[in-house]
Length: 259
Ligand code: DAK
Image (cartoon, rainbow, N blue to C red; front, side, top):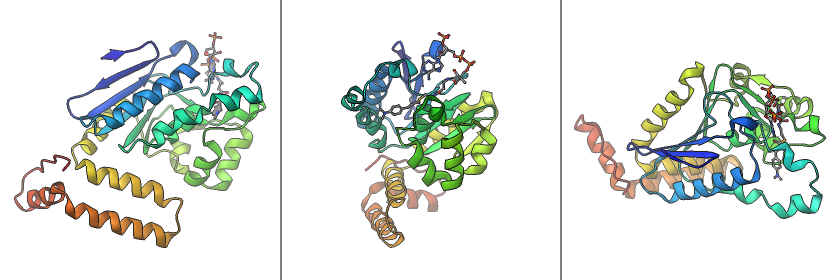
């Protein structure tokens, strides 16, 4: 396992990359260095053809307690603007490979926003989600108001962002913020297993599914359906599509090459 002080990266043989935030002394708070490292890591993983799916986690105890509040004590508007931290989050947005967040413990503020940059969220039963920025005289700044709105609707979003309350994994699941709730000790193994399954499929099909699903959220239904249909048609020009169909009739597992 390759390890820096604050981020661990393990690229497995099966095409799954495990990214682990590691700042236990600060509950994995996302300081500038961590966000920068996360951004560089996701750019590299996106460009690495051996990587077909990515799991991001904070480990067994905490996902991330948000931005590092120490960075806020004296910051001015101009300094916050000039940091342009949106560029770091953008690397996750631009990642064409599926991202699974494996959440144990707290996913708060920027931590909850980080989880929402994933495509699938697996939560341990004791996980807690929230956007407590309002308690600091702040508001969500990395997509919290907007991604929550799209995931769980206005009234649940308003409840979370205006009250700053924490919700359990089960509540988050019922709201549609979490894909699956599992036993705490199973969060990372389950996310890795799921990522392994996804990594075994055609990477072109997987990436098209991700792209169309994400883009479709912000399009009209008619535009999104057209986009879906075009992407579906494009897949017929891949060897993987022929391999998948042939393997079905030959009753054998498909071997996808990504071509
Ligand atoms: N930042 C810095 N340090 C933190 C931290 C954080 N977010 N969360 C915890 N820590 C530190 C604590 O200060 C403490 O340090 P020591 O006292 O030991 O030195 C250590 O971690 C352990 O914390 P606790 O003693 O509080 O541990 P507990 O288990 O009792 O409680 C907790 C865990 C996560 C419930 C609690 O620590 C907590 O409420 N933390 C703050 C959560 C929070 O308010 N998060 C929102 C932060 S604001 C932006 C985009 C996005 C954002 C900002 C900008 N731009 C586009 C510019 C995002 C903003 C946020 O996320």
